[in-house]
Image (cartoon, rainbow, N blue to C red; front, side):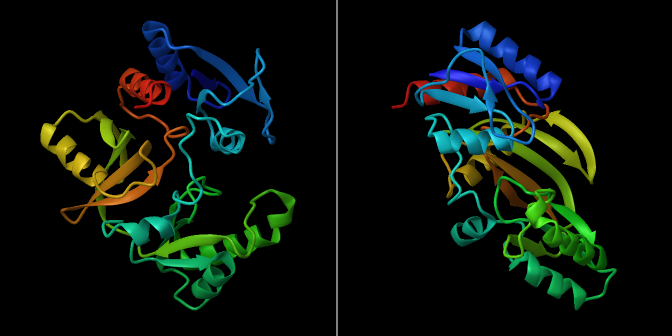
Length: 266
C-alpha cells in the first residue's frame, strides 16, 4: 500500500504536516498533481494496480474511485444527504426538502425573495458549497447555473438534486476523522459563526462523538461534522476521508491510523 498525495491545490500547512507524518513513520508515499480542469494524474512513476491510499481534491477522489484504488473510501451510493436522512434521525437538515434544481427555483420564486434558506448539493463531492442565501438570490443563481450546465462552468443540470432547508442557529461546529468506525481525532472549527480552530481533547466530547459514530455511517472511514444547535448536537454532514481538509487536527495520528487500516486490513 502506498499513500498518494495530490500536492497541487493542497493547503501548504496540510501538505507539510502530511510530509512530516510519512517521513517520521516510514510510510511509502508519492506526491502527484492533477492537470487543472482534467482528471489526468501527473506522477513520477506509473501508478499501476490498485494498492494505493489517495488524499487530495474531490476531482482526485472521483478519479481514484473510478480506478478502484483500495484505499479510496468514497461511495456515491452512501455519501448522499438523502441516504443519510433515510438511515439516521439526527441529521441537522433531516427535515429539509430534497428538490431538483428546477423545482428549487420554482419553490424560491413562490416565497418571500428576502427569506433565508440553506442550500447544498445532495451528493458529497460538492458541485457548490453549502450556504445560507436569500430566496430571490438563490432563484437567480440556480437559474443561471442551469443555463450554464452544458458549458461546464457550474455543472448544475436541471435535475441535479439539492437540499433546501431552513437555516439553523448553530453555536459551534466540530470535524471528526473516523477510521474503521472509531473516532481518531477531532477539532472545533467554528464558534458562533466565526472560524475557530481548536483541537478537541475533552474526553466527554470525544465520547459523545464516538456515540454518534457508533450509528450508521456511509463508510467505516469517513469524516463527520457535528454541530451544537439550541443545546442539542446534530450531524451536519459526512465527508469523504480521502479529500477532507484539516483544521487543528493531529494530522500525523490521522494519516498513520488511516494508512495502517488500509495497508493491514483485519
